[in-house]
Image 1: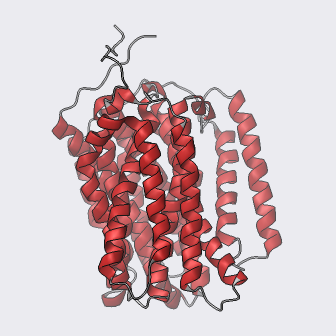
Image 2: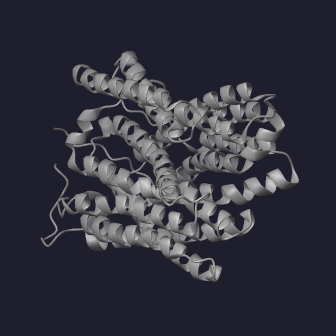
Image 3: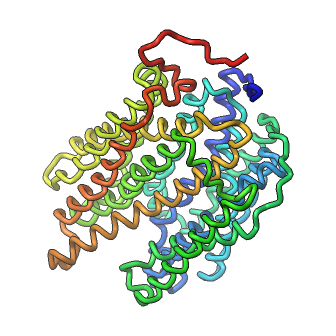
Length: 482
């Protein structure tokens, strides 16, 4: 096996690339969360029921999950830089279309196109960054990349509230235009075209159909279950069809040379553990931005602005974590960090269950800030470890599969949080969800995150040491194979 050539990049260049990629991801993250705040206003202007408006969110998520699997092949075929830049253009133009839509049908169509742009932007951006840095820079690069994912959802709600209150909901989409233009210029000026040799495989179309249908059907199931939007029998049928399609895909992936989602990557223990344990952790994290603002606004009587400032502190905590990440991973190694930190982060999320309306918001801010701190460390560690032992030639396959799983688990988080909340409200015969129901939901999702702890404890003590720089109780040995 010949040694891999590591790209040589200066720290400044690595940061610049990371920030440019992060800006595009920020646009996408901001977009998803700003819209939630604007849904009631959009419903009024389209004369539609607010409940039916969730289709504006779902159509985008479904489109995202259908197209993400194709992103790796597209990036290998047309070059990471071209695809990334093209994705920003598609995303920006479809945002303009969303803002101009005269009715719900046009909006949904524009959101589907936006999903195509987003699907190419997320994994391809990550791939672009991973291909442009050396393994020792991965931790730093990844921690830059998780920034927008943390800031977007936090700025989203207050910004959305502000735009809808003082302007029109249509401006929610137009904010993307200046960011998109800046992104395209920055990519053209500063980012080199990094390509692996094109492996010349054809696009696995039947695999894309199987995986796309399975993802769309599962997403649709998650969205409609328990919402009384469609009859339960429909939801069950869609779920069964989706599951069959998934099994067909698994069978198909074994027979093809370059499947769209390369399941054989699960044979790499660090990757498998990052995906499985990481997904459990993400389910809990995905539920938080849904549950917390609802509890603060509906049962504590906070205004959308006040609630936005309380939830903002999670982001602040994450920012404080950034400088420490490299040091912590080098000192303790991935296994110990993921296990102990995972335990702390899950417990802290469970602690939200103790919040009382009588508490000063500063106390809640502090708890949420500390949670954000540990959560950010956990995310960066999972996101980096996933790629630690992936050969460069398989990097695009890995980012595709990882991003797909990430998307699924975050969506699943919202659904899980909502389901536990509804179930608790129903069993308690409450007319609307009370504080105790939210408490039960917080405990429920943090219990799911807890399941990840024993999974990460099974990692090898040396897992990912080439990235973390942590050496486990033995003399420093030369890791370069000459």
